[in-house]
Amino acid sequence: MVQSIFERRLCLQRRYPHQIRSEGGASFFGVNKIDVKVPGISGVYLAGELPFALTDRLKLTLGGRWAFSASDDRVEAVYNDGVGIRNFDSDDHYWITADLLLSYAFIKNLSFLKDISAVIGFRWDYQKMSFENPTALGILSSPLDMITFKMSTYSPVLGLTSTFKGFKSGIFGGDMKLGVFGSPIAWGNMKYDEEFGQNAQLRVDDDLDRVYYFNVLGEITALSGKITTGVEASLSIFAQYTKFFVKDDPTGKGQLGGAPTATDFHFTIHPDLATVGIKASVAF
Image 1 (cartoon, rainbow, N blue to C red):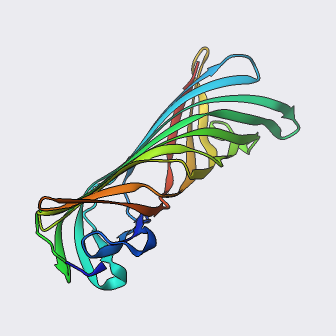
Image 2: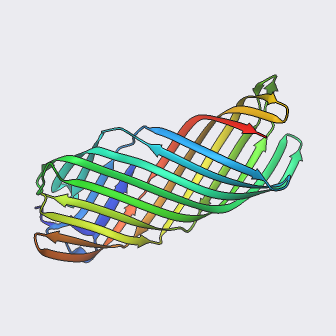
Image 3: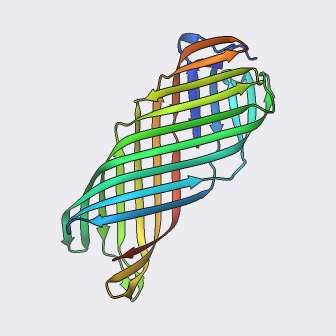
């Protein structure tokens, strides 16, 4: 095994660089730093929202989203700044989000501006990645070794949305919407498991409290019109970008044969998600 895997730093990249680096120069059986470099990937994004108008200005929205990829792109794990390298196949990769948001339109129907709304709420995110079938250079490894990473985060949501009247001709065109959301604080839990030669394991399972994120979105109505009395439908094109920043000091445990060890680590991960798609909606 390499001389020095954890300067106590763990770092994932989704574009997930994730990095684990051991504190104070200690090592996990010869390794003191791991960088897992996950390339940008493409996949499928599914989402749904249930808005409830409480008043003409106050709205409650329950939403859920699922982004996943079947890509088997190669993922690189670099140990001790290149002393050892392993290349893995992607096995499982998805990101789930659920949120409950309350919005209040403090400006409404002002010229071309239909509304500006303040948003508060709560958001939960769950991310999972797993990698398998490594090929190795300079580090103890087996083709059966795997890396598994899971992270849950819980965050308050603060944001602003604005809706503008757009060009409309018959059923074509319609409103445009912009929004920005984020939180300077969030909490969560991360689990990281890595195997070395089937006889050594590194496991990190700890809480996180240095998390923040931002999310921006844009949407433009392409088609809209009445289906029947009291029911309207629309088709929109949307784009959004979400980025998380996580940095913390979890405790990890390793085992080589029957010899357990524990050490603290620096952990960083900056996952992001960019989506473009079509949104269909029905209003009653």
